[in-house]
Length: 478
Image 1 (spheres, one colour):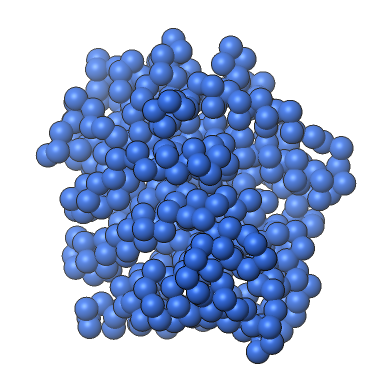
Image 2 (cartoon, one colour; image 1 turned 135 degrees about the vertical axis):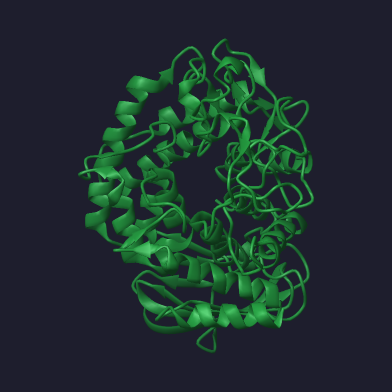
């Protein structure tokens, strides 16, 4: 442990303005420092790469990383990276099925940084892209969008008939002819949230564009075709013949909860029914027959940390504190104590037993990859957005912290929000907020968008589930 803490301290000094976390939990603090270091380590010529062994050419990576944390802690890098995956800022580029996740990241970037010029261009880019995607990939028979699941571009994520055994040597999902017509939970959840956000963008800009009807219709279709209310579960996908596949898709479950496609009570029941491994929720479960415990599928029963951190956010969204902290502490443990060479490392993927691996696909095991950015920004998201409760709105920063799960204090410092530099101090365990003080004076946990200078926010917890102002921490947060 001493060696790990020393390494993380060294990493932190390499950033000129590294955000810092002090909780008294050495692993959580060290994992946070490692995550900040990973973001800076993977930034090259202002582009935030997908990982230490990757470039930055995936829209989903740039979007997730900006949305998770980069727009807050490295705003110029996040903005450059977001524009880098567009077609000259006219439309969103790259793999079609999940690129609309860019809209979510762009809206979040605006909320954090307040740049209306950015928002205007981002809205136009998003609206054009949505129109193209609806024209080309919307299946009106089911009211759902077609294409693979979010980030799951490897065929190991899918069972037959999407996977064709005769093409077992083809790793790319779209090289299997029946795959493009499937309709996946995570992808349609992202489209729903993008529609909702397009309405918010239009409203903020005074534009006449309206997307409420499309959002409502898509939400209805997801619930109709991909939600089993009787058994409290979500289906992974519909295949090209409309047959439901009942595998558990970790990211799809997370997004359905986070985006309020399910009610808070429905979400809790679904989360309680999820299959969780020793090291957290797997990407897709159960294991397909062509894989095994000794040969786990790359996109099947493996642990992809960004999935686990979105699942943690889903748990926080409905007050499932125990499972939230299980996922967070588990990722800290994986990053600090389960690397290939013994040095701290957010690997891209882990087996259910916690071994770094690329998983099996096309009859061989892929190599483990290093310093994966969305694993790192996912951990930052869990701490900044959930534990400390930084929620960005059009008029300011609302603090609604989940809090720590153990008695003591926790401090997050050097958070730069527009013209303000913010330190947040939590005391006690999460639950009811007993008091909030800003710069020593009693106040509501809110910092206006126009705030300037230094702000120290001190929040003290008391037992219970209700936060200041009657907002229920254990309920939905929107």
